[in-house]
Length: 104
Image 1 (cartoon, helix red, strand yellow):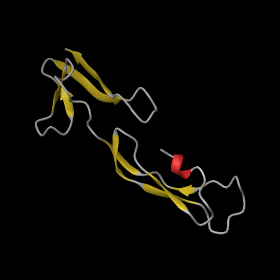
Image 2 (cartoon, rainbow, N blue to C red):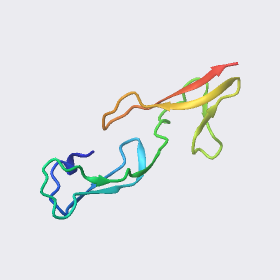
Image 3 (cartoon, helix red, strand yellow):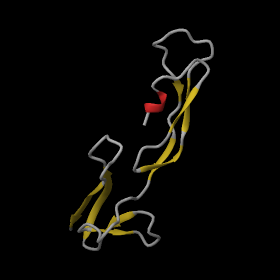
Image 4 (spheres, rainbow, N blue to C red):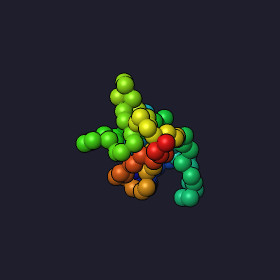
């Protein structure tokens, strides 16, 4: 959420966290010291985020299974393809879904 960055004073900063379902280290956005321009953009870098694996409550979707170390997903036996995690919404609550595994 960038709400905390809506009105940063000159010389101030705000934290930019990762958005769910991503996890990682937040970054800082800074307003230059001495700034007097009301439309000055904050100086920032994207946070270092990676996709967590939130899919997994209940049985896996047909055609998918967890990797042996449970850290990711793979196509189940009899299925093939390249797995993608699709995040259909750009809101703070995302319901990810798996696509890419098809019957052989």
